[in-house]
Length: 246
Image (cartoon, rainbow, N blue to C red):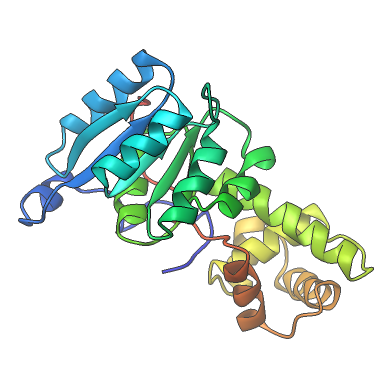
């Protein structure tokens, strides 16, 4: 399922009781981070839920590549800043050698700078280390299942960059911040009336923004907008309910 942020609590929220009683095999996770405290914290967090099994750790990018190839985990939790080989380069190598490898970037960096490089390297998700525990568990579940997970900040940052590039490439004006908000909401499946209520504007104003977006991006309808987003890897889930940070 492809959607954009942000629509509040979702039925897709992580439910440890349901997962652990389903009889499914645990998701095998490799943690790649150069900080022992972070690795220990993540290991402890995942150990509290029977749905996950940490099969190994790596303290640098080269070790992450070697351990991933050796252990064949279901998912690699990959930091960006690591010695010997950074996380994006490690992700690119793993994706090149095994395109089915599931990699979730977990970083302190601003997604505006790194989310597109992460997508191009082959990552299936991007999440901040400040994310609530429940959102991390949800992201691991979805990426391990073959879907993508980019939280609200990551999705909007990538969308802004892509629409800027699209406008520059086509010799058109960049869409405004408000038009970007409307575009996110349209791709999230909201109707004009719902978008108007969410943004605190009139329905006619939303219709005007929609028309301008279509014209600037040379698109014809919601289906085109959705294809535009999917083609560039812009997918995420609704924001998970709040939970204490890791």
